[in-house]
Image (tube, rainbow, N blue to C red; front, side, top):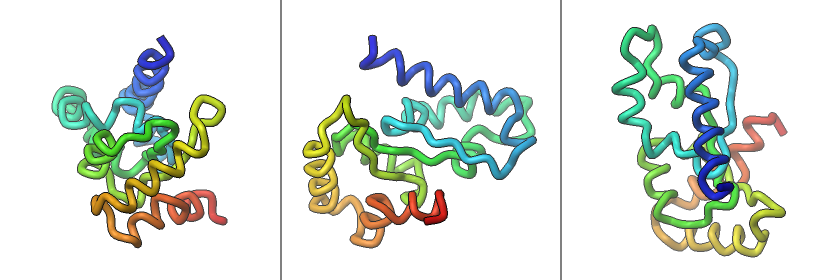
Length: 138
């Protein structure tokens, strides 16, 4: 079930890093979650509520400090709207997921995002290229 299973397992990998205390031991560690966050943003509030019990660092704080999210092949404004509500736009990066997604579809999605009014022009540029430039120090 590649349309679901990959995302569930990748998101679960991030949960395991959190529960293992990795982000407390390595506070500067940055993790990139693809595919609009591998389901994590959509369960952020619930996960924070249940997993943060008996932890010294809240789950939502680890997400905010240690995670970047890419679009990677999920070219729909509905999940992007949710992602923007729970994730600082400076931690969202455009990507395509080739060969599983077409570059043309990614370009059309970015144009739709730009035209949607969901982000300012500056936020759009951050998502389109500036955030990755900052992350990898280009």
